[in-house]
Image 1 (cartoon, rainbow, N blue to C red):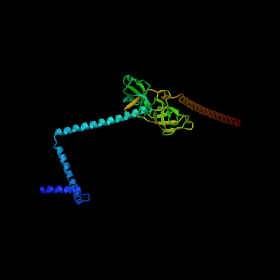
Image 2 (image 1 turned 120 degrees about the vertical axis):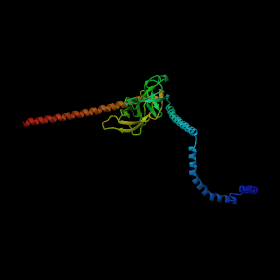
Image 3 (image 1 turned 30 degrees about the vertical axis):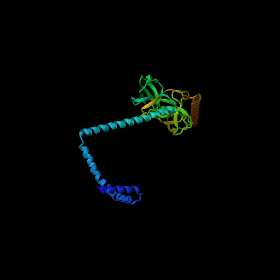
Length: 318
């Protein structure tokens, strides 16, 4: 035994002092190369037996142990769900704070606690009301833009009429061309931008934003994206379909805008531009009606003359 110990110490000493290409290193590498396949084969053969051993161990575990494991699993599952929900909430709140900061909104956060009570209206209920300073008419946004406006306000809850309700209307404009109109909800829940003059520049993909006219909604908030633009030859206005930027389906928190800054209201120039566009469109419409009336008058005259000629011819033949 003493001889083996001394021999081991000597071999270890030589192994440490010699270089990587020394004889002892070469012998070790050869042994590893030869035995590696044997180790892998042994591991493959032993794996099923190890698995069976784990199974038998689980089967023979006491009911108390299994119950503890189930409780731990349920606790960990609940903790994961709680952390995931907290992460989702933090993400949504971060997006709301980003919107508030970007547009410098004077606003208060609230939570959506209910939806429409019937199939004919598009509304949601939020968990704050007059006790929190809310009043009827205040705009409501989520992280993506405007979703609606408060129409009913109780002490601790408020009803928000969504912009895609058919009774809703928001003064809006095309962000790129500044062409102004009125965004209205439709009976099927879609959105349409109305009263945009046919000579204005509008194309699919344009962003629709609030115009600030009327002093209700802050100027410049996102409303939606143009999905189709149609116009017949005699139309005074475009028929523009819009897809909303915001949705209440996947959002629980909202911002209620409590007041507007001076730069968030439409300027006199904006109002004048909107009035000029409306007046021009109305004039074009009246001109078109006059042309149609003149055409109808000419047609009547021709028909009358033809009748008189036919009558004269008949009398002559008689």
